[in-house]
Image 1 (spheres, rainbow, N blue to C red):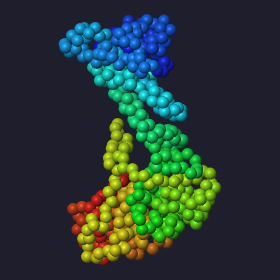
Image 2: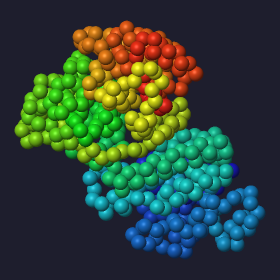
Image 3: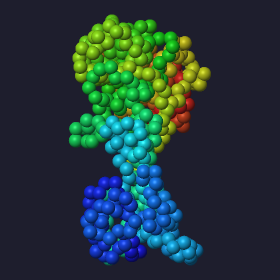
Length: 496
């Protein structure tokens, strides 16, 4: 496909001079619009006006200039289609083999703090349409959709004697659709009050990062430095956990580190909930994320202030509590609106993306089955369900130990369930936490009875797990032999 004609219409003129001159040097006919046409003519290049091909002037302050069959027909017509060729000649539509178009700087305009009307004017219509048209017809048309492609395209153009290969045209089309997708996503985010926030860095200082979303729709920041990438990941984990374990009967406080709970307790008062959550692992709590589902009062704030933490989240704070918590300027204090969020979970994977529904399923008492001789008491069932909710929010392989509405210890992110259990027991022993009569929750089933045996030796008396293994009977028999109760949920909660 020899390039004989090109439509050039760009907002950013940087680098277009070299490309345009190379095209003209090789006999390519140029079409252009408005400011781009004047710029190219200022370089001494001969350029045909788009409006001379459409027989229609630019209207509405430049909002409409290329949206015309005479232009889109020349881009979209199929060179190997007899009917298309006939119509092209019949309507005297000019052929366009190359489209060089960028899009209005929408995101930059939003980031500059411009007013709404100025932002709306940076929603590209003609440019996006031209890019999509040329990309769709990549079999016959080449599309350059960003100035970053100028140099590479010029090299390929010269190496192929002005006839880009079909593979190269397809590559350009793929990049073009990626640009239009991200552009539309940015516009959609703006209309949903979402905004791209550039973060200080990613997980590590050498990694760039940003956040696309409406953080102000969830939180009102009352104090502290800017939120970081790691802060946001921990906050997401904290909100997910507290949403699951919160109830109307008590106050719940959780402490998280690296996305996992290192403390969690439900008590009559928020002060007691924090005190008991902290007691589970005061070492890991250092530099952690604090979250509660109740108002933080002065007594609790004074206790919190003894701990070094990154972020403290609550639905509200008393005036006196805020006076205490805001004395340290870098500590982040967030007032949480407790808005539900159920969006899909998206993560990059290989050369694509993995997308899944967020795990919002929680098992209630009516769904539990008890395959063992020993049955749990009413309070123990309550603890079983609390443990299951915490383990759901813990990195796999995970084991959670709970008693009397409090997380005692945890084993997280291990390569075997036995290792996770041993880690949880070791942590409990390190803080002199008595595991007698406690509950063990597992995020997946036990294929062997070894975990039940290890648990019993440590004093654990109750187990909650999904069940579903072909060897469930082995764990059940071991529990009966050792006098443990077991509850099965039928729901696995892997978290990778």
